[in-house]
Image 1 (cartoon, rainbow, N blue to C red):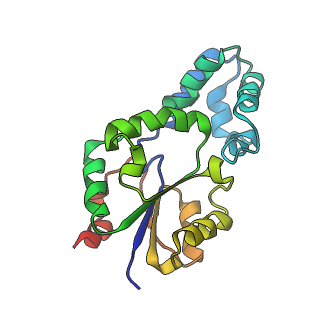
Image 2 (image 1 turned 90 degrees about the horizontal axis):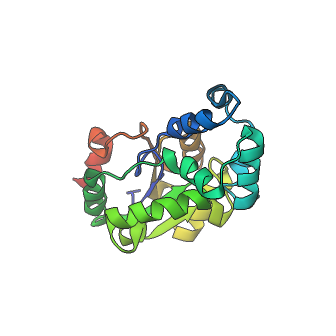
Length: 209
């Protein structure tokens, strides 16, 4: 069955993502070794809970201040939290627009309100006044639908919302774990090296022919 819908991860696929920029910035103001905490994987559940709205933005800020022992204002905290988000290249915008002439496009992102409020401006600058909605039929943010990759429920949710069979969709993500769960459900997948260029993936370029 031919592909009808292409579903893109956002961070690391559409927008360049450098989490270490945030980690280093926290490390500069925290008495703790935040670099070591990052290597241990930030095990606290709050880092996932903020992406499903299981905790509020304010509660997440309180958690960060307490766990990292910092005393920044909320605005300063948000600025550091957003440092990991970089730009969207013109080449990617051009590629997406060309792809949208042939396929239905969607975005599926694990994210949170702090990040969304920040990157929506970047999306408007890159794609136009409607941001991602200029070129993507559907945009699914984990904190809004209260489901998070790699749970199978989130893929089932979007397949139902898009009214697509798994084999009619191609999912592009920079996480092998997310890819594997989607693949197990019958969704066609493409693993994307974080912050790479679409032009480097011949299997994706073949879709345009």
